Length: 74
Image 1: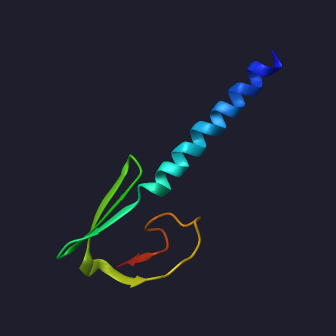
Image 2: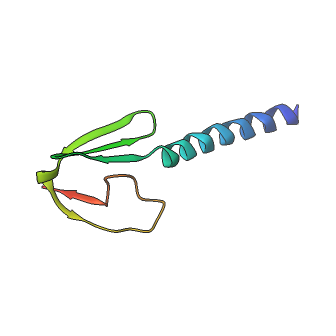
């Protein structure tokens, strides 16, 4: 019976880890003439007018969500 509980916990951790890995592996940026399009994971898709970007900050951490600190908007 302990093994059933163990496998349930391992399964949850595995699914969450795969979703996080998918988020990092599928983040894409597309720069068109007047628009920056950001797509990350299954549900995040945002198009930003380039004119609304005030500042771009370089980061080197994996803990930063796309848009949260890289691009500062008006």
